[in-house]
Length: 111
Image (cartoon, rainbow, N blue to C red; front, side, top):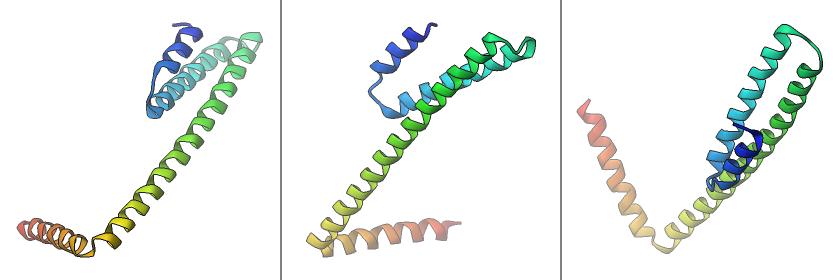
């Protein structure tokens, strides 16, 4: 599979997790190519493989940073939404918490 084909597939994925996983697979493939290239010689092919690995590692680091930011943002929004719901509906929140606690207690008691 060529690099252009991989980039096209990469662009078509909508899910950031899929993009990250594909980048990780590309890094692994390049690392294997580097190992194969350096096993026989340490010439131009090894330098090219190292350069590709460095590029892929930077791309993966960037994606990880983006994914981390997205997860933190979603978690903060979920916490805000939960806080707002509890303030708007305190008795419902207490009732839900009591039910969840009772279910967990029954499950623990079964053991």
